View (spheres, rainbow, N blue to C red):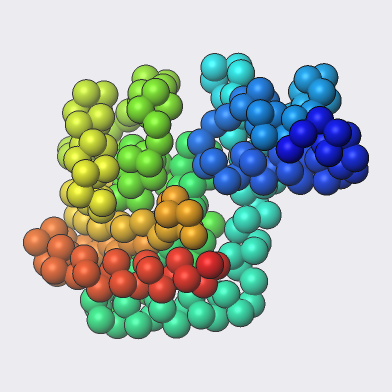
Length: 254
């Protein structure tokens, strides 16, 4: 966009264009990088970022220069995904998958330093693990969280690992930074993630990505179950079915 064209954009539209640019990239970005596309005066682009940060639509990263989506923008995205027709279709897909596996299936979204449960379908077994919609779980010790971490650029991943208290939740939690980074690298290579009793004792989980039209992680689809009736080996048998369901979920917003 040339400077003359940028000058005619109303202020409200400029704010939306900045939000669109940050959301499209999906990783922290600087005002200068956004302005390479928008072509606004330097003071203007910095003022727009300051406004969006103040209102909670963007948040500044630890490096002090780059920005990512803020809590209000993530809430807005969750509201879009929770619209009535999308939720009805989403529930249908989750129920079909849950019945096929025989265990609880859920959808989670990245939310700052955690994953938040957006949707779930409970197993019919009387023994079940209670993680209701709205629950926030850590990134470093859950299948969905590790899957999200695998999509981060390496410098942001290392920044997260070095800044996070990798507290042991169970005897299997990866608390060594190098071991966690190696695990994330494996997740990145294989395209799915496992929780081997790392978040809760006697619970395993498997997660696959739900991708947006640009092939970026939009959400995660996961299944978790008690170890007394489920195993990692058995969970892997359902990997194909989970990937098919994740593709169906992705098409809901395509």
